[in-house]
Amino acid sequence: MPMANSTPRVSVIIPAYNGDRYIGQAVESVISQTYKNWEIIVIDDGSTDDTRQALEPYFDKIRYVYQENQGVATARNRGIEESRGELIAFLDQDDFFLSDKLAGQVALFDAQPSLGIVNSGWRMVKDQGESIFDVTPWEYLPQLDLKTWIVYMPLLPSAMMFSRQWLERVGGFDSQYDSVDDADLILRLALSGCEAAWLPQVTVCYRQHGQNVSIQKAQKQANLAIKLKQNLFARSDLPEDIRQLEKPAFYEILTWMSWQLFYSGYPVQAVDYYQKSFLYTPYSPEKTVIDWLGRLTAISKSYGIDPDTQSLRNLPEWKKLMVNILPQKIVRVSVIIPTYNSDSYIVKSVESVLSQTYQNWEIIVIDDGSTDNTRQVLAPYLDLIQYIYQDNQGAAIARNHACKLAQGEFLAFLDADDFFLPEKLEKQVACFDADPTLDLVQTGWQIVGDNDEAIYGVKPWEEEPKLDLEAFVFYKSVRPSAMMLRREWWETLGRFRSSLAANRRFRFCPTFSFKRLQVSLVKRDINLLSSARQQYHVQRLQINEKYGNFDGAVFRSARLTSAHP
Image (tube, rainbow, N blue to C red):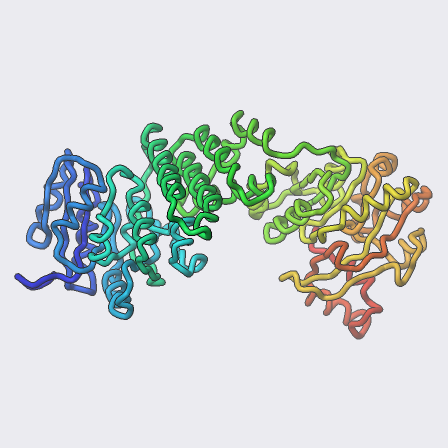
């Protein structure tokens, strides 16, 4: 605290309303700062609890001002009027600073005198202060320029420090935007040319409580946030490059408000805001749904919440929205993905189907008793795939289960740790359409490492151009992820044979040959076909042990290795 009669450099303003439970900790966090040239101004905005009594032990260290309840924007402005510092920091009553917060931000103002805002990260904490998650926006939004503020608005008032001159220049907070007044202030500052920079450290703890917000208050906040964006883009003086940000800005705010409504206990209203955001999406309908649920999950986890996306998906309103926005398909190809503890790879596998140039598919994922996070990572995709969980019985039974559910005339198999290249399905369907007598189409494949780096391409046709019994038995020219099969042949033969566990990729194909199955090997550039992920270093040891060196002669054996049980 500054010496008597000295002018503090930093004014810390704490607006308070019925904050007796936590406000003492907020004040203590300022007193404990390593930087000492500050003043604390508490604006009690008409509290009816024991806020004043909780603050009485600090009256010799703070300035306490009581006013009739007028809202947080007016309380903050009153604090600015009462303050004397050239730098202004705001602290919400239930947040608290970490010890170096003021020192770090003042040092950045000293190093860059042209700055008007210094922003920082924040730590989400529970009621008692236990850490949940650190928010570090500079890692994905390194520039605090006008575009970043308009589209993404990475702000928490308690994490910021302002130049007093800039706050006075734009007139402080606007009470007509109460509850989003901080976002309005930042936009006006940015549009006026105020420079901002990151202090790349977490400086404040942002406390999370159980939400008990009325639907009227929640929707008022959502409507004010939209009004703020509408007023911004209605300005006639906006440069064209800024006007081009309208769609992404509305998409961001609408999806954020959808989450806020969901978090506040109003999922039906959340669906309504997701529907509004669809008008501004930069993605395909399928990718939009994935993005919605992915955002909802990620934000919820940052707040320490385990999101129940299934409850959202069960709503009639959500199901109706899915019918309205997702394209209706005539399914020709059923893509079957058996999985067991593949949470590191399964999303890439599913995404590779979603990204196919050929779109008349369905995706069936059979989770064969996974004990990892497979279901959780697939949660954003559940409106686009069939996901079935079964007790662990092995890949053959998992594939058979999916084949029974399949609606397509063709079956394409994809291991959970493999992924298709974009034209895989299109090329194989084209072969079937060109020659209706074909029953199976096989491609080559590319071996990749754990980080998707290419290792080598496998072109089975170079060793054996004809797919017959000899090719299957002696050359083993088969990999499930590289094949497509007419569904009627699976129905005729009945199943994959789970008894042949030692070589699961070889279970099915010899039977086809004995049945005079007509097959084709697609001879395409390897980059157009399918990729197979391998535990490369393990394979290499196994191959060298058997063959003595690692060269083209051993590719046939290497591609039979699998991580699936």
